[in-house]
Image: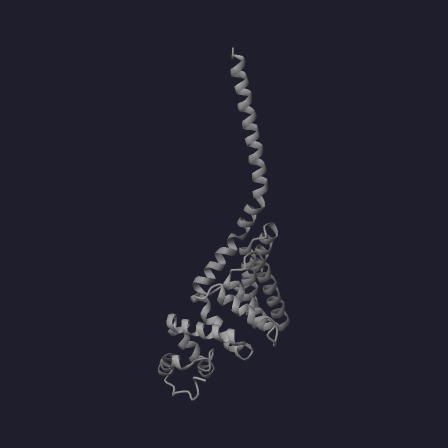
Length: 243
C-alpha cells in the first residue's frame, strides 16, 4: 500500500501532466490557424519558386493560387502571403490578351496586396517594385511611382533579379523623376552594366531601353561606360551624351 507522501507525489504528477496537456492544447489551438495557413500556401510557394527559376507560370493556375494566398492571408496576415498575392495578381495583369478592365482590376489587386505586405514588412525591394509597376500602369501621372521606385532601390540596391525591371520602369518615367530619382536610376544602370552586361545589351537591342535616354544620365566620369555600350551595340558616339 502506497504511503501518504507517495500518493501525494503521484497526485501532483497527474496534476502537472494534466496542466501540461491543457497548455499543449491551448498552444495547438493558437498555432493551428498559422499552421493551416502555411499548409494552404505550400502550392503557392512552390509555384512562385518555379516561376523565379524558369520564368513560367501557367495562367490557368493563377486563379486557384490566388485563392490559396487569400485564404492563407485571411487565416494569418503574414507579409509573405500578401507579397505572393501581389505577385500573382501582377502576373495576371501582364496577360495582354484579357480586356483592359480585367488588367486594371488585376493591377489594383496587386497594389492593394503590396500595400498590405509593406505595412507588415516595409524593407522589401521586390514588393516596392510590384507597387511601382502597378502604379505605373494605373496612372499616366506619377501618382507615387517615383517614391515606390526609390524605396525599391533603397531597401535593396543590389538585387540582380530586379535591376532590368527597374531600368525599364525608370527610363519609361524618366521625365517625371526628380534629381534623386535620376541619380538612383544612373546608379542602377551602372550596376546592371557591371553585373548583367549581356542582359542590358539585349534590352538595348530590343528597344526595351533607349541608349540616348540612358546616356542622358551620364556625366564625364561615365564616358568609358558609354563607350563600352556603344561598341557593344556597334553604334556611333551620341552627341551631347554627357549633359
